[in-house]
Image (cartoon, rainbow, N blue to C red; front, side):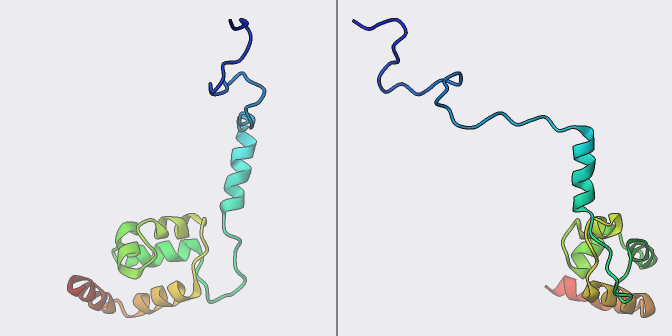
Length: 119
């Protein structure tokens, strides 16, 4: 005969049991969320050859590309230009150079589009 408060053999511990490891997550405060976003923002580079977020947007729009099209055509993935232009990710020197070249020789964009069609 078992006692009423005795644990059953082989039964998993319940959530109220002190043997359960871990603690519940603390709710985030609005200031903590803002601080996390600030931490995600890329630190500006001191290299003058690297484009700033507003320059990237200006060139992309001048080329007639959406953010999605630019990411697919120029590289970096579908949301890369959103991140570049929001300042969340620093633009690389290579991407800066590519954008500058295309801005100066816009007809070269046609060559990239043809290459995408072949691939």
